[in-house]
Length: 341
Image 1 (cartoon, rainbow, N blue to C red):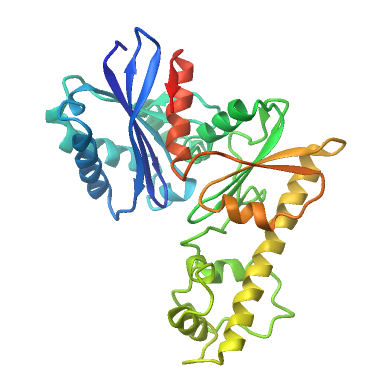
Image 2 (cartoon, rainbow, N blue to C red; image 1 turned 90 degrees about the vertical axis):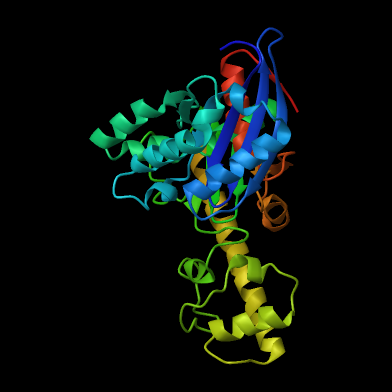
């Protein structure tokens, strides 16, 4: 890689998070040109949107694009019969819309759970032979952000908590070792919960919490999401959605607010129980405060609802593009380039 080339990092989750960096290898500096997120329905839409955003930065920045760095949530690949097909579709879309603008072939690299970067063709070959490799390559969106957290706070042991739009990641790091196995399904080990700030259906959460003492039972699936529950309480739209969730056209306002508070309290209780169990599993015997780094859309919510003794809560000082920033940071660090924030 020579000076004057650019890198695009993408976290293809519930929202598309992107970071574009201009790299000057002569001075070993990477400068962020643009950074953001958006939501689309298809890869083609995402690539077209990205092309417009990059062109708005500079007319010739596309011609300098050398690397596209990628990360995924595992659920993203479940849309496909074979997980590696997601990579093939992305590469096809990029070549279609970016190919004529670039001077050199773009290298597509995917970050793994180990923080290393792998050529897309290698990943496709490995996943086509062994389906379980999906967990190593297609559950990597958190890996770069963990690297940022480790370096920013100077920590070797901490718990990383990331609440995004759809899900909640719990990553223990002990003496520099990230406690996620190569083929670990984090849903089975309670290191990934279906609790997000915006797009998680409330019915998914009611499957996880105890409703025995509740004064309601969900009637049927209706479009009630966490964003509706965390919205300003008492709006007519919010109360109407809660009414339908309980199987009524409209219910009494006080009853609806009571139900909203019950769901919030139950979510808080579930998060505290799971986080405390992970702390007990990996940090037993630690006498000083355990650092807990909070990230994602829900980091401020986590700060408010975590009531566990002997922890020190730290907020990752980035917005919800921390995942694409993390990929960029980790890659540049691996080639000896420092990034300017």
